[in-house]
Length: 366
Ligand SMILES: [Zn+2]
Image (tube, rainbow, N blue to C red; front, side, top):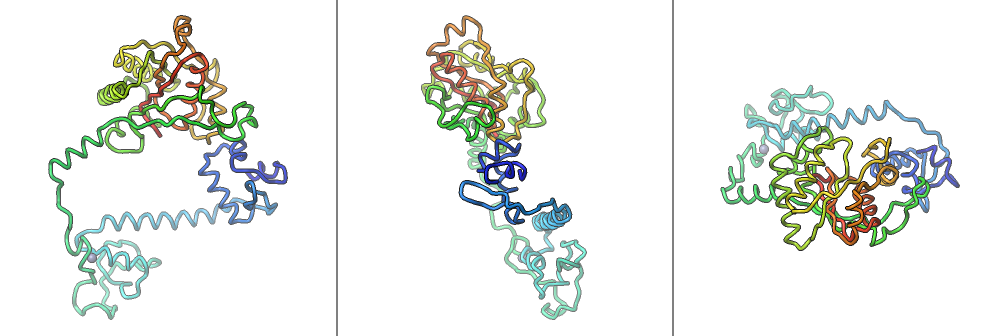
């Protein structure tokens, strides 16, 4: 990133411009920029960031120290959560904050060595504030001192309502409206707003991949470690209910097009055929990678991802389907959507081939 800045006019570049030069997600890119800013290697200027010229080295020792401190904090948080009935949450917090009245006293549970954090492990008597001979200080109000305050179990009706809400499938895929900045610099001639006649319609994914409920099945099918296979029974039921809802909302579908997957060809094919059967329409073709183009990483920023996908996709329709596509409405099926560029570009290919509307449909959404 520093080299990219140094090579830019006036050693200055916008974040969007840097995205085209550095293979990092936007959030990580901005995090690095703010670290470099604090270290004095870059500074925020009008229109982006400037390389200050100050030398910068990766301070491994310092980052290791920060990481150790963060891990210790994390361990303390987990320990707080796992305190037992003999402990007190407020006493724990006070010890963590080196409260001098509690240092060296209190029940075990802090478990630590008690040296640098002030967390006491013993029941020492040197503490003057303790009631002589009495137990360690307790707040008397926390859940461990006073007992649980919430009802132990929800009633059957609430539990059922939650179960139904969690199992309900369907989250909207909002179509992209804008190309990222700086695409011409990556050799891709896309800029500004995405023309209305090139856009996808709003689509639907069965579930977000980071949720609970149906999301667990979705992760199992299309998560980072998931292999290929057929669509499982609960995802089939979810597919049916989502597509039937789409239809009752007045969305017309004339045919299904699948984005051919190099990692999960069987899953996407099964999903496409299943969706077509539910809707009573044919599978009319697929969006396929050009020969020899690798699948490409998903952990890129928007601009880099779009450039990879744009070079890779092409339409594969039978002659009959291609001839009959004009004005037809297509369900565009993929295993999951992340940046949204595959669906955006596949929809654009279909619209340019004559499709009147393209509705994306995926199992998962990141
Ligand atoms: Zn307490």
